[in-house]
Length: 231
Image (cartoon, rainbow, N blue to C red; front, side):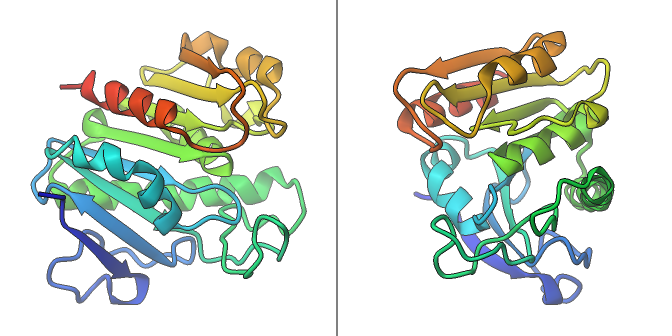
C-alpha cells in the first residue's frame, strides 16, 4: 500500500485537523506530505529553482514507498520564478526570492524563516534534530545545506547541487552526515568548487557518469540507502 498523500494549504495550516504544520510563512505556499503519521524520522525535501513540491514528491516517490516509518514533507516556494525554458508556465518557485540577484542577505532571511518553520514541524511530531533529514535538488540542495549543516541535523541530502555554494553560510564543522550526488555532465554544478566547499564535512560523495542536471534512479537508490542508514 502506498503511503497516504495530501496537500496542506498554507492558509489553512492552523485549522486543518490532520495538518502537519500550523506555521504561516510567506516562504511556503503549500506542502505535500507523505508517509508515516507517527514517524521515527522526518525528511523535508526542497525543490530547485522553478520547481514545486509536486515535482519533488514525484522524483522521490519510490523512496517514500520504501520507508513507511518516515514522514516526508515536500514544500513549495511561493515566489514565482521568471518564465524561462525551465519554467515555461511561470508556476515554478524561487526559495531565495532573488529575482536575478545574488544577495547573501536575502538568502540568510530565507534560511532563518524556514529554520523556524522546521522547529515547529519537529515539535508537532514530537521529534528533534537527531531525527531530521533535510534534502534538496539544485537551489534546494543549497537551502538544505545552509540550514541542515548549521543545525547539525541527522543528515543532509544534496542532489544536483550545491549550485554556487556560499561559504559564508556553511559552518566550519557539523555533526550532520552529508550525501552529495551529482552528474559529471551537469553544467550547473562546478564539481571542483563544490568538493572544496564540503570536503571538510567528509561527505558521502557520488558522481554519476553521463548524468546532467536531473534526478535519476541512481539518485533515488542512493537517497534511499542514506535514509536507511539511520535505522
